[in-house]
Length: 588
Image (spheres, helix red, strand yellow):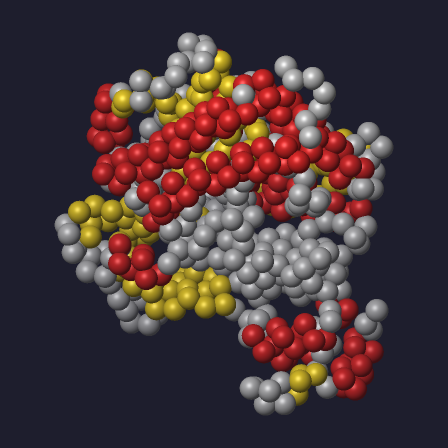
């Protein structure tokens, strides 16, 4: 091995080159994907893991996907100690390292000579996985058998870079849209093979020993950065309680995050063991999603330039227990929705728990829930006579406010931290027999605060030609995303059905309907929580909110204490009236 330490400039060059490789993998998958959930919404992630199962690089991967990739590669090596160059493996097993059955992960071991140096990982959310009902999110599945998904526990799908046809045919027989699935499979495989090719080229340029030295030093550097970031937090134990709202016959699920910061030691412990046992439904989290969402909540509170890799993870301990709704499910417990809903609540609690450390810390709670605007649609397209299944991401939950800024308007879900893309309405209408009436932001729906939570959204859509089946699972329809440090909660979510007669009936928290042409599904999403006392918000920021339609003039005066006057096209702040109004409200 090369003696001494690497030059910092060389370290930076190699680190950025690894990120570039992951971004090229990402671009490959985005451009080659067949379904809109992949090619439009970008519900996938790519990463590089070392041959010793340590996460090395993830670029813009979704948090809910990335932090468990090393668990999958570890299981891969346990099951297949004879890995060879040219192999590829498919994994979606939630009981060891996978996130949930819908996330098909392709793992390609990268060999340099006889050395298994890296594993290129590409994980993509499928439009259909053979569930007993046409949805990849089956909230009320009592167990894995009722869920019905195809399970691939690190199954080999390529040998010598050629498909193993038996596995491919299994999928074609059980998946409702086999050609679409196969196209997405090829895109995911192509992303992993792209990573393999570029990593070998990287080693050709720098040499095996120098790359090994870089990995060791990069992890040590990342650990030092994480230690420094944790040392800047106040030491203490911070506990946050919340719940996932009731769905179907299930009552609300109480949730708790118990987070301890030891600033002097530069360590954080996140204890999730004091949570309910697994529920007889698909809402249970997996080992990977429970771990990664707790860590994601912590990362949302520290310097964003700290690398997200195994070196940084050395300073964080996440405590789980078996048979826990936010822990380690036992077979045959269903974890169909392990990447959302309860997971969204968990990251909210983890990121807001640090608010107990003082007004300069913590992040409010972001909007949660997968209502019909993020539902799975399926049926037969009357234009082609062919079946279709697709996970839509047209709706958008409002993002949480923080110490530094307002909530992110296109947050979508806490587990994705704004990295998931909203669907194109036009592409959805082109690819599937649906038509949207409106998609719009709701004024006064973001949690008020010194920094404001992002607005909720409302939308309506109908079927065209034939009925369209819609499956969804709401959250935040009972308990809204909370603000912190005096910030208000965001709006609650709701779902309804507008009949052809104009009558509107409420839809339950989770369900499935056959949407007829002329009927419209209505979905109101949740807004993000606010940060800080709204009466201390900059008056010009409130003026901007009113001009953009985020906040009404009435709310500006009643909640923020800011009096807006003038015509709609030229509003302005009445400074004297605002001072009087804020004094009357007891502004601090």
